[in-house]
Length: 315
Image 1 (cartoon, rainbow, N blue to C red):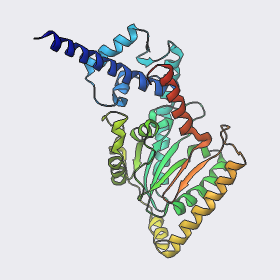
Image 2 (image 1 turned 90 degrees about the horizontal axis):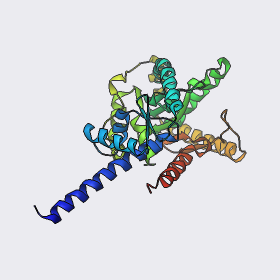
Image 3 (image 1 turned 30 degrees about the vertical axis):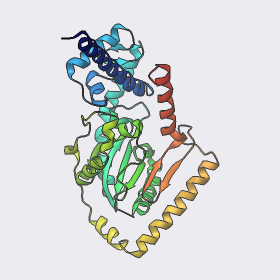
Image 4 (image 1 turned 60 degrees about the vertical axis):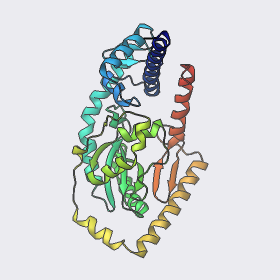
């Protein structure tokens, strides 16, 4: 074997090891925004591409020896702070207690007209809940009936304020069957999609995940969602209401509701109205989608992530 060949192989091995270290640091940096340390298996799940367990163990040990990362109670973090592990453990316990309620409410929401699939999103989908946890839902509805469905569901939500349970009905993200492909393709949306917990509408959710296979560019091919949890609930009134608006009247009504809802939320944003967390209220809308984005949350997370990568000299 020539010296040149040997040197080339050594160089390639060092480059591969550096790439592995960088990938691990990047995913830990992302979750560090949320003060959420990860287990080894979670790191594997969220890495771009696939890594053998033996490689992961070696790279993690190397990063630990360099004090680039730290380990507390099986959780890896960029900080030598055991309180992060404790916070996560407590959040996991609360999430496990809250998840059955999330499934029950999700099955209830599936009974509303034009709803075709329900998934749990947000922090609960990542197995975490703080003391004031919301339950966030991702909802797929029939094509061209998003605004009728959303209006009916949010009229219902008004009544949940009476009992003080509105935080269990955070219907933050709607798309219809015409817009299964998520246009914002970045690490934020990739992780949100990969951690989505299906509740109802297995076939539609399967199509959604298939259409959004671009997520593999950002996270590993290890799927965190479990379609076997997706169950179907039926309601006799659902078909009647859908039949009533499956015509031109329904088309006009849906477009009208889109216009007035968009106008009302734009006014809220311009007036600087804030939600209970103090974030400026904001709703991003289109013909086939509606997503809450208080305080430009997605943009802030991506900006913080970029800055962390710069600080870690990974960009």
